Amino acid sequence: MTLQLAKNNNPFTAERRVLFLPESWKRLISVVRHKALNGGYTLVEGDFGAGKSTFGLILEKRLLLDESVECQRVQVHPLSTFEQIYNQLPEERTKPLIVVVDDAHEASTSLLVHLTKPTDNVFWLLLGEIGTSERLSDFFNNHVTLPLFTKQDCYQFLLKQLHDQPKMMQLSQMQSDTIWYASKGLPKLIVENAEKSMKKLVSGYESNESFEKASKGWWTTAILAVAAVVFIIALIVTDSDEPQSNDLQNQRLEVVQEKVTVEEDKIAESPQIDSKESEPSLDAESSEEQQLAEDNPVKDPIAEIALSEPEPATAELVVASKPTFEQWFDAQSRDHYSVQLYSNTQREAATEFQKALDLADSYVYKANVNNEVRYRVLWGSYLTRAEAEQAILSLPPHILNQQPWIRPFSAIAAEISQ
Image 1: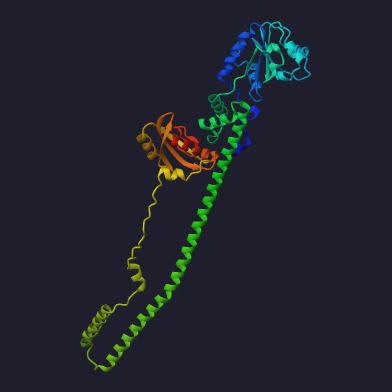
Image 2 (image 1 turned 60 degrees about the vertical axis):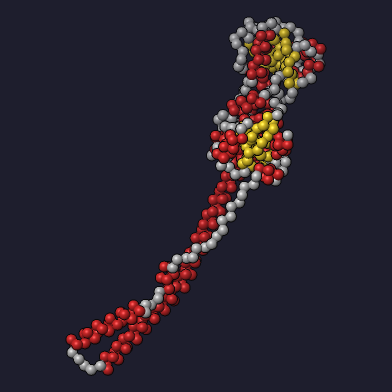
């Protein structure tokens, strides 16, 4: 059910997106509020996707504005006129009014000229793309660039955006940094790359879930097959034992019949005597039969098999030795990736951490970083960065606290060669 909700509800849709306010934007809004008390204008430029409209929406919602100023946001297009914009403003203005003009780069040059002229109790905040300041000479000394997101801004934004999502859709600091580098700090690209990461995480979760189901189904089939084979073997053994048992019974019956015949012949040949005298003879014969049975017991092959001890099978125990770090590292492609789990200036500390991991394919190596020797712990070899990210998600919390770092083997080779 959790997976279904994650697939059907994109947390980055426009209606569900949080209004995140980085520290650099807060400082810029403080400057705008201060300048608004004296009127005039300011041009804020930014690349496409830098968050200009979001910046204007934050102002309109008065997230950082006090009661000393009012705020209103207007949208312009190439055919907009100054009169159309001015008529949208309240007639009575008892407080300074900040008018946020969104998409100012779409406005005509004549409209931009009007917006740079002083207007009573109005401060024009123009939001336009890079290059708008080149259209008027007055913009040269009165424009600023909207700050982009830093790595920490990106991480804080993703935390707030995904706070109510399942655990599998939470992003680590390392994943956030990867998104930030790919997005170059542009909020629009951060959102797009985060959506792609979410799809990969969900896809990986589905693949693991399907694999587990298939694995369980395979084991069930294998167990049923083994049980069927054992049952068939048991039937064959039972059928083969029955004739032997019948033969043994027939043999015993023949021996008894022969003894009875011999006894009858002896009785017929012997003279008649009293019953009292015949009793010792019978006792003697029964004792002879008992002695004969003890001297020549009938062998039971099934009992012999059950009581016999199987000969111990001789098997050789082959222990595969773990390759050294050099052997393992030389066998890796420089285009593949590994995960750095730990780094310390002391070899003993790195070795103890590596032993405590109990993870296969984990190694300690010596690196030279800025003329400083460090001992680092690597884990695994992965064809793509996405595979390495999936592997990190399987690590326990105490290892994740070390903030695992995905590293290409080419970068590790450069450290080792220094």
